Length: 221
Length: 235
Image (cartoon, rainbow over all chains, first blue to last red; front, side, top):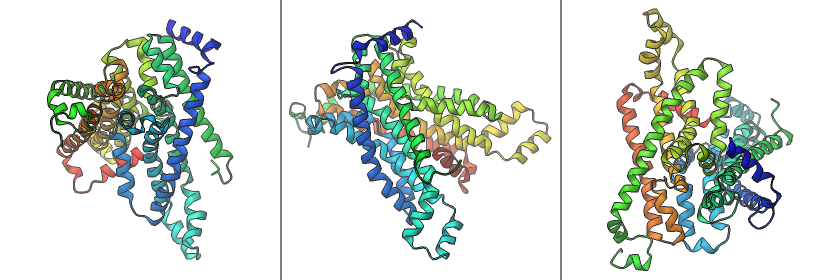
């Protein structure tokens, strides 16, 4: 495992962490791009998914959007953006591509979560005279929460993981450490970059699980 | 719309590009198809034993499902780089990475299919003198086939898309055409290769759907098994 040891040495070297191409700068870019993409995707997908689930329509749409999302290569979408006028728009191409890929899991999970709420519970709430709004906020949403959170977690991990590909078309983020290592045949650096991205994905997943537990109204499990 | 000179004008849609580089496009597509096919086939060959293992009880299910899910969270670029010290710059590297990704979907679907086999069917087969091996081959696996094939379809479609990232080590099929075209801002090449990639995913999905219908004619009227597989995917 000589490579692993040398990758560790690379990570332990302070010089690799500072500067424009250093780990801190790349980490900042990565978190910034992923954070905005995830926030935008949530703002778009969650209201639509939850509402479709509430009214019980558009199931085919939610599932098909999700399936179509798998067929489209992120790399190709990013590449298309990079040869379009968006090229000079800074992080916009990366963020747009990531939003496109975070929407399907969020949408599907929000929809399925709302639909899987026990129909008899919904009927009972209606019988108690709850309005559609009350039903949505006080019955369906809390019960759908675990599945919606699962969607959010998988979308977040996917976004962090996919943001790496931005480096292949010359954008920033932790992927740059990997591609720079590839270009200079510096395998330890490549491995070190890969470890950093995997760690970030795990940290994000852990943070979201913790946030879910700490937020008010967490289901007791 | 695609007259002479569209290569010079750097148009998005350029028939001249398709005809003049047909050789390059065909080679890339062929590479893309075989990398995808090998990855999915190896993925199935690895996933079935893993699913059988996971079925033996909670002691095995937790690590098998946990590990395959964890694999899915590793970024594709990072996955290919982590495998680099073991395989070097080769197609085996890309195939191994893609197999590891397909496992998440395949293991879950095979497991869901096997678990959906009714217990009384098993009992009946045992009563007829089927041993464990024959029970698996002639009863359980055929009944799990709809869920298995549903998993293969999802895995194939996402593998076709992921293969493009293999261009980082020069084995990305159509991705090999996309990567250099970004640097030179060659619009027709990026668009053509991307569209071919999506078409490939669609064609593969339709072919597998046809195969699924041929192989599992009993699911057509009720379609209950397909529903079960969709649920397994969502979980």
